[in-house]
Each structure stands twice: as C-alpha cells, then as structure tokens.
Amino acid sequence: MILPALAALLALAPYADAHSWVEQLTVIAPNGTFVGIPGYARGNYLRTTAGFSDTSMTYLLPPSTRANTTLLLPSDKLCKDTQQDQTQSDGSPRLQASAGAAIALRYQENGHVTLPQNQPGKPKNRGTVYVYGTTQPKVGEKLLDVHGAWTADGTGGDGRGVLLSTQNFDDGRCYQINSGEISETRQQKYPHQASQLTGADLWCQQDIQLPTTIPSGKLYTLYWVWDWPTAPGADPTYPQGKTEIYTTCMDVDVQNTAADRQKVDDIYATGQDLNKAAIPSEFDHLSAQQIPVESQAATSASPTSTSAAGPKEKATVTAWHTVGKTVTVTQDATVTVDAGQSGETS
Ligand SMILES: *[C@@H]1O[C@H](CO)[C@@H](O)[C@H](O)[C@H]1NC(C)=O
Ligand SMILES: *[C@@H]1O[C@H](CO)[C@@H](O)[C@H](O)[C@H]1NC(C)=O
Image (cartoon, rainbow, N blue to C red):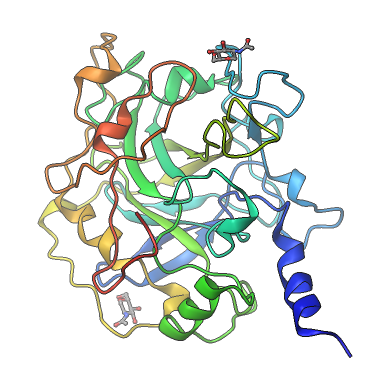
C-alpha cells in the first residue's frame, strides 16, 4: 500500500527534469480544427525512436557548462547541432502548408505549467515563446542575431527574418496528468479523449500564421524560442538568476500561394475535440495580423524602435525578461488568455 503523500510525489517526480520542444506542427483549418498530415522539426526524434531521450531534442542556452548562468554569447548557436541543416529524419516529414496558413506548434508542458512549485523564480506565464520566420536561414545561425533582433515588421537586426509570434508558454489550457491542483482543475475544465499520441495529457500550443507572401516552392524556416528565466535571488542555486532558453528549428514546405487569408472570415467551431483544436484566443487574432516577409532593404534598425505586435495585441510584460543584450520585445509581448480563464496565467 502506498501512502497518499508518497503517491503524489511519485506522480510529480518524472516531470522534474524533463524539458520541452516542438513535437509537432499542424495546419489549422479556418474553423480552428487541425487538418492534414503533421510535420516535424529538422532532424526530429520521435519519442518512439530507438535510443530516444529528452536530450535527443532539447537544446539549452546558455549551456549548463557555462559558469556565468546569465551569460549568452554572440557565438551561441540558435539551433541544436542535429537541427543545423534543413533535413528531415525518416518518419518525421516536413510540414506542407500554404503561404498565409495558420499553424499550431505543439509541445508538452512537462510540469512547467502544472507544477510551478518545482522551479522557484520562474515567470508566472511559464516563460514566453517566440517564433521567428525567414526564407533565408543560415547554417550556424546565432541566437542573438535573431532573438531580440528580428522584429514583426522585418526591419530588426540584419533584416533577414521576422518575429511572427509572441505567446505565453502556458497557453491557458494545457496540462499533463498529475495530482497538482492546476492539472486537476484543467482536467475538469478541458476534458478530451486520451489519444495514442498524447495519452491523457493535453499538449500546449502556439498558433502562428505564415506570411501570405512566401513564394510557392520555398522552404520557410521557423525558429521557436522558449525564454524561461529564473529571477535573481529566487533560487539559492542561482543567486544571480539564470537565463534558460530552449529552441526548436523547423522548416515548412510552402506549396501554394495563399488566397489572401486576411479576408477569410475565420469562425472557430465551438465544442470541438480538444485533441485537434487551436487555442481560440491565439487563433482569433491571427486573421487580423499583417505579417511582412523579411524586408528587402535589410537596414539594421534598433530592436527597440519597432512594434513587434499587431494593433489588437495587448502589451503585457513579463517583468524581468532579459536576454543577454537588449531584448525589448517584451514591450509588445502578447498575453492572451481564453475568455473564461482566470488566475492561471499572468
Ligand atoms: C555574467 O553575465 C552577465 C550578462 O552578460 C553580466 O552582466 C555579469 O557581469 C556576468 N557575471 C560575472 C560574474 O561575470
Ligand atoms: C473544420 O473544418 C475541417 C476542414 O474543412 C473539417 O474537416 C472539420 O470537421 C471541421 N471541424 C468542425 C468541428 O466542424
């Protein structure tokens, strides 16, 4: 017989050291439902791959070997070594999508949402997830050339790419099954049938829209950056605080020029199966966004001088979000919470 307290501990234990990456990309139909064949990151390892472990897919910056826990270097690569090239592994094809398509990037919360007590000093929104896009990726791409540099209008940094999306890591719904209060509340509020892929967990997602102007036949690169800092003084292990960033690098095979998606009157179907449904609050504002492809005149502008978000987005900020050099995208950070949600995200 297992004591209840021990059972609770056992339930929490597996999540302590697990981290997150984009496990799957899916096109979202205008009614908010996932459609078509899913795609995967560069050099993907499925969880069913022989020899798989979390470190097959996680990529941490700064590396844990760096003595200064808040220091990012200009030489730090944005993509994991196994994700430098635009190649796919067997059984993990690239997503195919039209220009202008809405796409869900899904990841597992691994307790970072439902067991916030496991890591002291982390932001209430469980960190911020950014997606940058470009038709001109580089092998050896540097984190700081992109993150905090590229902007929504395409004029930031070296002008090769754009900031497509800024969201809370906690999408307001996602959970893994554990006995924590957040998980138990969400299990009640967002029930779904266990699926072979996700089990009884509800994966997190970041819903983005591809630029409408990507030429057909091009690969479009997406850089997902999860910025999850520890505040100074909150965790005795990291008195100076800790910069903690994870990335996933992906490409999308753009197959058709979009009908102007801005004109599509998206109607999110209510009551749909949560295993394959977009997050309404994230999805709803996609259709109103104007997204440029990267600017032709790659004039380097100060990242502070541009607006990183569309007019509908709220300017809510994670207080002490800093990344090495000047990351002021926070002024435009999008914090969207489902209507009817409260208290779970900042
Ligand atoms: C660690 O890096 C940060 C960020 O660059 C810097 O401000 C700080 O002075 C560094 N700390 C030490 C002890 O070198
Ligand atoms: C949404 O649209 C897709 C594609 O047309 C369709 O397959 C799906 O059944 C629709 N979902 C709902 C909930 O109506």
